[in-house]
Length: 311
Image (tube, rainbow, N blue to C red; front, side, top):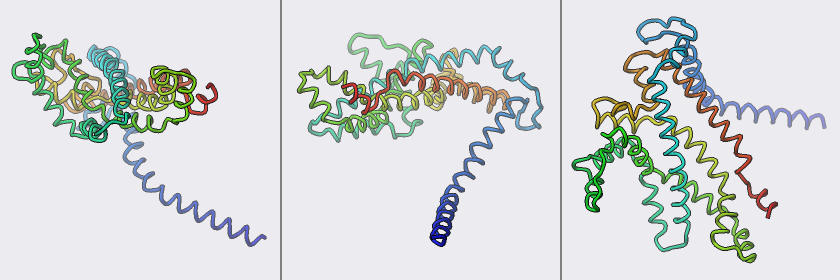
């Protein structure tokens, strides 16, 4: 009996050692490429650092300056406004599209592929394509509007329309969320719908009281990822505003996103310490908003066992 215990203990240690051996490469990469740079940026946020000279400790001066910087508040305002427009519209449209493509109709797989393809295309090439489409003089969008008697706006060249233009561009890539929603819709148990039909529930009632509650965990997942992605928005704004306007973030700083202003401070003005402080403030903002979403999830996110218990 003692021999068996010794052998099992040795086998358990070998299995643990093998597991740790497989984890070590990831752990080394995490420390060197993620945790290390994060801790370095935290240190730099308390320094005056321009890459060329050694960092000089200045305490909380970067954070004090940050909250007194009008461009910081402008970039935060632009990012929040973009999030308020882009996040709900993307979640709703991708969900509606998934519901439509979940129907048993001929050629539905082809349509799924067509709507998913834009989400895997290069963001640079897609953005440049939209810059041409939104051109006030030769763009296809304004030409189509003119045919129905509407004078199109300046889009990316107009301070009032530049941000909505980027929101429209973002809707081009809702196929990724659509696929996640589609997978969730296909996993909803059919017996719930059958029981609702027996009870005389109409199509809208089945959608309202079965589909939406059962899809709430998937909606929650897309909401969290979309929130993080929205506050990390950079490439499209950088390319589109720079291609149309004389300065990145134009016109009149109407597309000066938070990450764009952070990038300018780091790589244009060489103020790495100030940019590091901006990065940590953004991290805290995203952390607080994500925590708020998680805290609110108990009010509107349902799972299959809860839904069956209520029914």
